[in-house]
Amino acid sequence: MGHLLMLWMASVMCCSAFSTTAWSVNNFLITGPKAYLTYTTSVALGAQIGIEECKFQFAWERWNCPEHAFQFSTHNRLSGATRETSFLHAIRSAGVVYAITKNCSMGDFENCGCDESKNGKTGGHGWIWGGCSDNVEFGEKISKLFVDSLEKGKDARALVNLHNNRAGRLAVRAALKRTCKCHGISGSCSIQTCWLQLADFRQLGDHLKAKYDRALKIELEKRQLRAANRAEGRRAPAEAFLPSAEAELIFLEGSPDYCARNASLGVPGTEGRECLPQARGASRWGQRSCGRLCTECGLQVQEETAEAVGSCHCSFRWCCTVRCGQCRRVVSRFYCARPAAGRARPRGGDKAW
Ligand SMILES: *[C@@H]1O[C@H](CO)[C@@H](O)[C@H](O)[C@H]1NC(C)=O
Ligand SMILES: *[C@@H]1O[C@H](CO)[C@@H](O)[C@H](O)[C@H]1NC(C)=O
Image 1 (cartoon, rainbow, N blue to C red):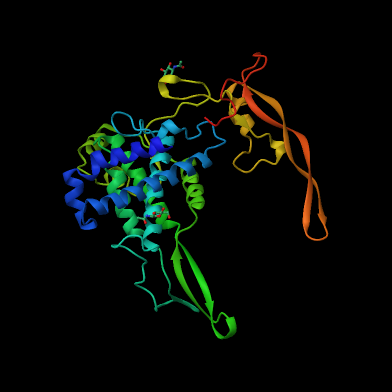
Image 2: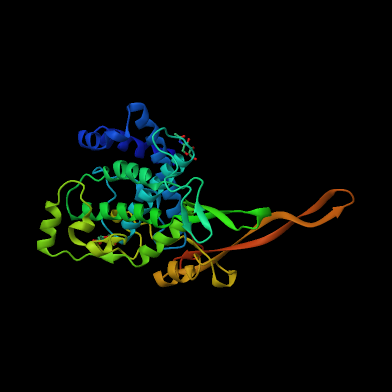
């Protein structure tokens, strides 16, 4: 993971931070190389938050947000413009907005802070604005500056990526929620002060996952493609060819089914993946995962058992200790395996791909 972080930072440092256009357009944000370094660390942290969330959201999907999906190719971009890369772009860009905004509210940077512009004003019946409202505007600027400048291309694919970066930023703004504190005589709550607060990043992940499920495939006609390819600089592609879907994820290319291994596509396939059988009261994420990962991909569900040692028969002793025994129990896990191949999950099978 550290390796990935360095890659990210290296690409930010080498190719965007000091490029003249990024510099001249955005130098109002920056007071010197030192300030830039400050943001770089938080940007890397934000991207990391995005990566972790992606892994969580896709843990029980055929495509499970593998590490290499985030590694930049020689062209310094996530390859393809599929439904999956649309999610990657959005979650990474959202992570950066999120991290920077949190930093601002904590007072970590000199040139941003809480949004207190409405404090003291009535917000609605029984409440006034007060406290520290998270100010996503600065986070959006930094995210746009750093993440968008990783996109070097000017073709339709690049525009789609930029669109999805923006959709990620918009998702953070849309997930701001009002949080209130009661005041009034002996806590009667006759008056409340409220501020806007970022939702948990998990909520943002859920939100973007739902957008992934209903992502829009863009069918470009020649005319639009030409227009898109002409679109200059950093214009949001939504404006270029899809005005009504600015907050939606969009993609250009169909995805493989991710069942079978295909080295040239970087798809490891689902053989060897763990799944959660229905009977286990699988979480909503794990639901139907054995079907999705194994049987629907022509693989069998194979059970493997192992012994686990844990505490048991605990009792309370007067006074005041708890004594426990050690018990062995058999735990079973389930994996996708090729039919006929006797015993079988391939090496590294219990590790998430
Ligand atoms: C930004 O926030 C993160 C996590 O809260 C923290 O580790 C980091 O040091 C902060 N950045 C700065 C410049 O203070
Ligand atoms: C991998 O995918 C490519 C592109 O879809 C396809 O042309 C190729 O036949 C696939 N290779 C294997 C081994 O399935």
